[in-house]
Image (cartoon, rainbow, N blue to C red; front, top):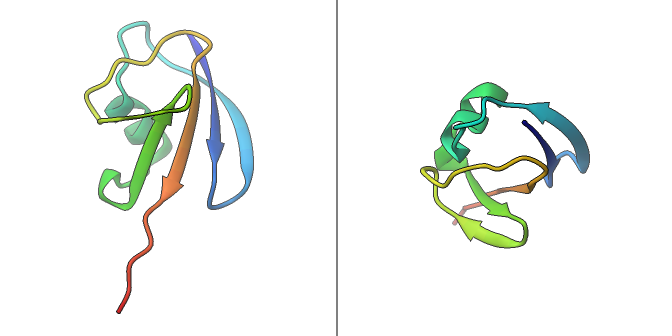
Length: 68
């Protein structure tokens, strides 16, 4: 399956091929992104790492910024 991923931090979009039973966690591992540092939206809805990813989903990866 193919998903479209928008990386908010880099302002880039890319197509990524994943296995049919992939989850958000699989996507993050594939992209070498630490799940603690991001928030994920699938088709405009915030999802957790264990959420399934479907063919033609639009995934947005938002960086979490913290500071004091």
